[in-house]
Length: 571
Ligand SMILES: [Zn+2]
Image (cartoon, rainbow, N blue to C red; front, side, top):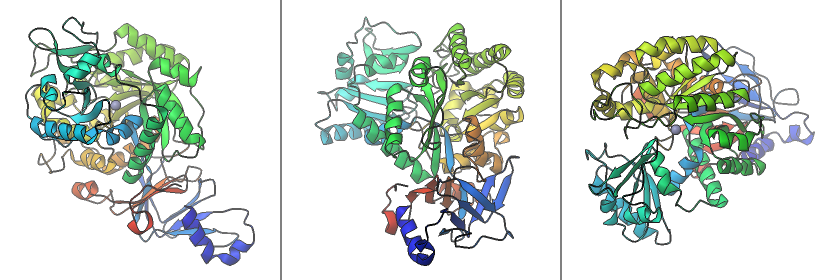
């Protein structure tokens, strides 16, 4: 930004001699698209923002543009005919985990167990100084393994140090024997409630721990120091900016995460807006005290709600189902809270004015959550914008309840389009054919009046909104499979997809008066891209290049290698 303004100043030296009362910037020569207040796409050709990074005017085709000078604008950005969109919002992220996933071993591209083991061994040899080998991204489904991997398999490549590797969904972890030993786990370690321990025939832990059982090992891992957390935040921010993301909801902010966000805000290093949801009611009280925090740092940070977990994930069979898993008839998944606990925690948060966001994946978890929200609606009136995180499988029999809550207190279904394409075959195996009608049912839930907010769940999936938009409108994966789209009746139109990553995602976080659209009075968060998501094929949308990202009138990403050499840039 500073460089750009210096260049602009050089061109307007005369105007610059007199101190200008205002310093407005005009961005013109763009093909602008934003969601309007009615949910439809609006087109525009230019916008102006002031020195505080707030949009002051938006110009449609045919409008008279202001002139450069004291009465007009002082700085100028030529959009060169590119597509300009509101900065994208990822409605479900784990910010610090995203940074750590990029800084530790990434197994998301491994195609077999042997492939993964080779990578783990190489990583351990390359990092002899790390006391623990940490990583994430493995998925036994993608390896076609047909079972979980074991500690013994890890021991063969890293025998000397503890290893802990999160499954791609972060609802299970894989330990080697040194990690199990560091956690003092033996055959007599009881299985905690809401968790599962894979065991050998003699009862000893076999290596993989699911949901609440993961804490048995993770609490033995040395906690990252504040400097590590700051580095993780900066790494995640750069990753978001590059993808065109200007705001995120952080779904599970710990007190330490919050302190890192505050340190970044205090030193002008918050380049992405964070709508924080505290990780449970304890973190909520520690961060917010008696209620949501105000917007801080010119709308860059706010803690407005709490995140609760009602069940696990489908891949590790932790999702809580009404009927047994088709591919494991002994199991219906695991609730992580009782109905009473859920009601009490939600009530405690709602009482203090916090927004409530609950992770629910299985149809039983969603039905239980919908009932709990209905019950609370008797006490907590008015618009509450209840959030269901993932809402992956909602029994069509429960859709009327969605409509009832949406009409009464407002309901956000915070869904991740790319989960549908990644999970399709696994979901078919887990659920069988009869339960798929209610799976990833975006269009149906929207018809019931729920607001669709889209995200990635990064680091579970890459924070790439373009893959998400393409999946949302096509129900097809990168290879175009399946032909015609999976359960294609649940596709959404392009405006709904864009809204899911902009205006609706802002509404879902009580941020619609601050950002999420291109309109006067809102923050100048915008991106310039090389592809028009309103007309391009899903395949072309997937390959969209983000040319520039601007947050509050400051540039955070510039793809021009001559300018930045691919690095995220400070505003
Ligand atoms: Zn998540």
